[in-house]
Amino acid sequence: MNVTDDIRYIGVDDKEIDLFEGQYIVPDGMMYNSYVILDEKIAVMDTVDARFGEEWLAKLDEALAGREPDYLIVQHMEPDHSANIKLFTDKFPKAVVVATAKAFPMMKNFYGLDFSGRQIVAGEGGRLPLGSRELSFIAAPMVHWPEVMMTYDPKDKVLFSADGFGKFGASDAVDDEGWSCEARRYYFGIVGKYGMPVQTVLKKAAALDIQTICPLHGPVLSEDLGYYIGLYDTWSSYGVETDGVFIAYTSVYGNTRKAAKLLAEKLEAKGVTVAISDLAREDMAECVEDAFRHGKLVLATTTYNGEIFPFMKQFIDCLTERGYKNRTIGLIENGSWAPMAAKVMKGMLEGCKDITWCENGVRIMSGLSEENLAQIDALAEELAR
Ligand code: FEO
Image (cartoon, rainbow, N blue to C red; front, side, top):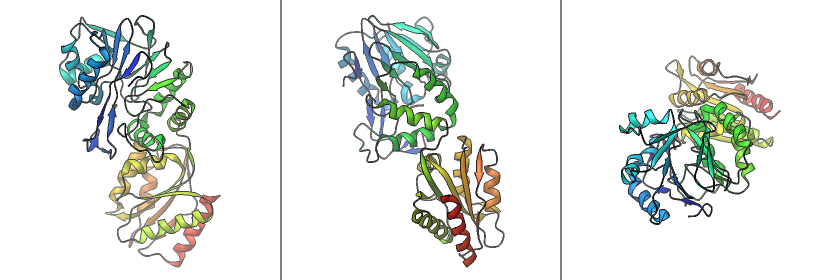
């Protein structure tokens, strides 16, 4: 596939993977992207996952059409992109490896590779002339590993964005809900903790004339770039993408579920956008993205072993470790003889910045009481304000 006249796509689809990075379900597979820039000198942008080395090399050979690559640019050392560095450097012994100072020790640690004598250490503002174009490098530490850099081609106005602007799904994934759904799940699952570094890179990117974004996962983006960049700006600044309420619940015997669903109905009746998930039965990463997407969050769970139900505990941990902030939160607790859940949840979230707590809460003592119905009404009223 041609990205531009001089840039070829040589990435691969992974339809076999069960869990991406050992934890994320990817029912539509995954893309590991790699590109070749053909100029007087030839640069290859990253490799692919270990299982696809030969397929990737075959695509590379076709793109090279008998020529030899001069550089392998390693933007990111996570093994889904770096696993075939050795395959490449063995096949093309004259090619020079270009990466940041932090990447080369990782090559040694991961693969026992030492490129002393055939390496270029790239850094912020570094340049690499290829002939009719001079690539420039943009340091992108913690987006989402410390050694990451992005690369800009000023001739074709292409930004190679490493993991930035990536998404789950193979190249033939049918995105019924558009790019943003699986890109958001990817972002908050994998990059979400690093909002500040993403903001820093976005500011640098704003100074560039970009017509195409080539990420390491997901499709090449070439139209309406303002839409994608705008979403990244919202996500990385912990802004509210959707004005609505996300209700995350767990339920052992259905009573807490009843309260959560009743609240959802009451909110919807007031015209509020609502998303609701059973944390025990739905993909945790999907729930995490919904929490960051909406402006308001309701947590509903049971007291369990003097704390809270395990799936809720995991969910709140996922939020706090990703810097959850700038939201309104309401609580529904259930505790048959000693309700503790609201206190525990609030305690877990106390380090989050700019949280507005709902004045109205719901305390269920096993089954829903008349008093609980009134509490749910009051909470709905407050959230709809
Ligand atoms: Fe796609 Fe951070 O690796």
